Image (cartoon, rainbow, N blue to C red):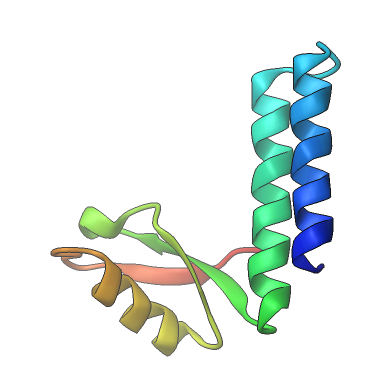
Length: 88
């Protein structure tokens, strides 16, 4: 997905919400899906979610679990003990 397609899909989700055609949770899911698709296809990476420590819930994109752990450590002030799992 290129940037223009991603922006169009986000705009469509926002328009549907504004028109009352979807609720907030649905709009959030749609936009989250667009962003994850864009981020992972942009450089052929996978999304990984951190579990545990202060990084719990953080999602990063990386080419491997090892790289994902490094990204979490770089982004979190003090991540503590955590693991990463690939987001499907």
